[in-house]
Length: 271
Image 1 (cartoon, helix red, strand yellow):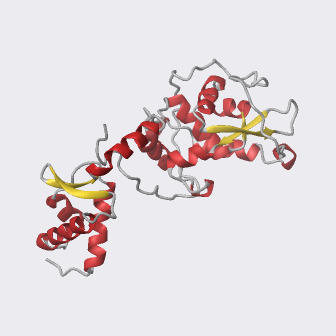
Image 2: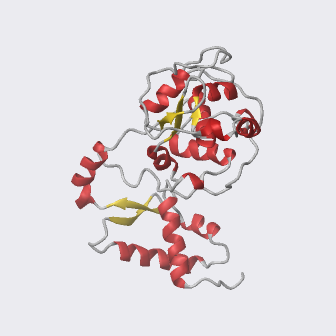
Image 3: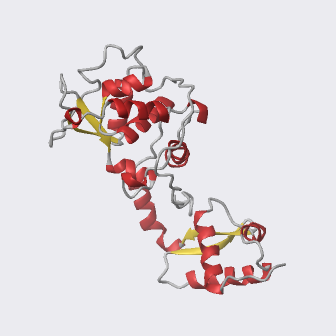
């Protein structure tokens, strides 16, 4: 076995991070596999050090033995406060396949109008867009300076929160976006070869590149369920629960960043 080059502090930090991101108890075998070249006795000793560190009263969480492994959990003395906090949280957002497709188009084309979304997807997306606005993932962004002045739409702050993004500059490729959506929103996603086409989105971007067509007003305006200026070529109307099929594959776009690891949802059941 090769000699470890990791200091105790570094190895201890890695073990702590593994506990943090794992949704289930982490066994010694799992740690040894994740940390090749490290002796099991050394790993186990550092786990006990971490347990002692978190046992101090200034920490609200602890590492405790669970089912042959270890897992982060809240401390029993804090459960009353945590129970009230958990009850105040918003329920998780879940999206249908059409909703996710429309959200992807808006995220990578924003600000964008309903006719532009309809042209990309080939169906009327008014109902789906209304659902995304109700769930506060999409907001209005003024009007486009073209005939009819259609309303523009963009993603919201809640969108950044749900996907763990600092800002839109951290948007990953379309394929990574699909995987992030699977983890963050619990969507019933399309297979990768049916996800919205990045090439199609890019070609639409080129067609809309004229500066006169990209001026927006400073005031955002509220909308109803459907866009008044919907494209006459939108195709068959689609509800939020209906599935769509775009057989083209989604090539990578600029900004291939890995999503940051997020905390597991089940630290400790607070009931």
